[in-house]
Amino acid sequence: MPSSPDARSLGPVAAIPAHELVLAQLRRSIHLGHFGAGDKLPPERELAKLLGVSRSTLYGRLEAAGRGGAKLAPPDPGEGRG
Image 1: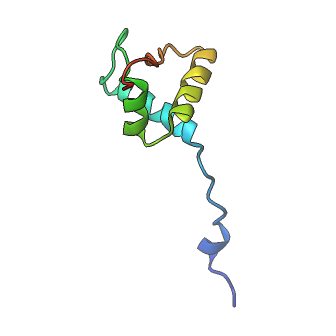
Image 2 (image 1 turned 90 degrees about the vertical axis):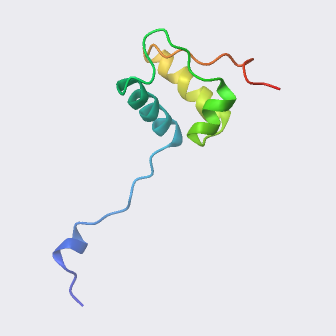
C-alpha cells in the first residue's frame, strides 16, 4: 500500500530532556516579568514541585546554566526544608 506524501515526511519525535525544559520555563518566566534582576527564585523544593521535576534535575540545570554564563542564582538549598 503506497504511503501518502505526508506520512513519508514524518519521523521519530525527539524527546526534550527535562533539564532543557526547566531552563526554557525559567527563561519564559523571566521574559514575562515574573522574575526581575536580583529576584530570588522560590526555594529549591518548591520550585522543583512547581516544575514537576526532581530537585537533582533542577539543581543540575541551574548549575549548568551558571557555567554557561546565565545569571540565574540557584535557590538557597536550606530554604523550604522541614
